[in-house]
Length: 253
Ligand code: PGA
Image (cartoon, rainbow, N blue to C red; front, side, top):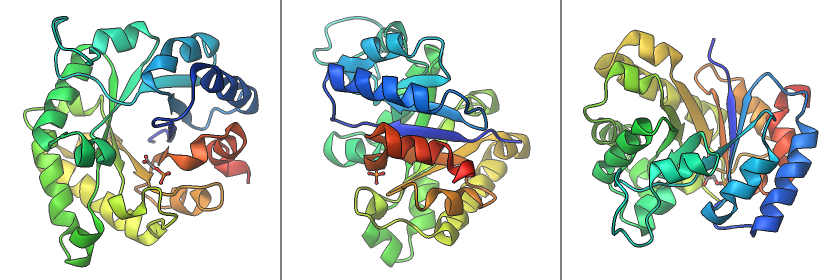
């Protein structure tokens, strides 16, 4: 059985105090939750105070990115994986579509970041997904397969067992337009097939694939009913503890 993961991506929102407050509220709303793993990704500046506040809780903390560099040095503005661990993180989001679109995170860069994260014992949450144009021209599966091939290049089956994938169709992010459970399931099944064909059936069976793109308390249960959807990566609806906790506790709603 794959244990579900519900992850919140706070993007470039929240000052330190806001992040700690939301985390404190969330912690009290999910104390009894154990059907899924819970992860939140505050901005870099709030990582340490937030993870300190969550110590001993069932909520893990992720960074939203990390450097490809693995040795400390003259890399202005970059944050190394061990610094992220030092700030109390266990996970790191890699290759989010906003980074791919605006900050030059190509598949090759994503590949280096995954290797860097694994080297520092951080669990990468690797994002993939097609644009609207690519979907409309019938290329969605091909684009995602290429992202998998290049982003996961040279990784072993053991590496893959330490990774979480997040399928996030770009046209569904922040648009209010969620992929239907059917559309999401189809792509998740195709991702799992790709992993099975290229890495191995065992890995494919245990790999967790999250869905991301306009996930809300109202649509999470339907998404989670699909066989190959193992959780969600949530943006907007994760910013408030109340709505995020309803997503986390989708089983009870
Ligand atoms: P959204 O963002 O839930 O606001 O659509 C998802 C994401 O960017 O990870």
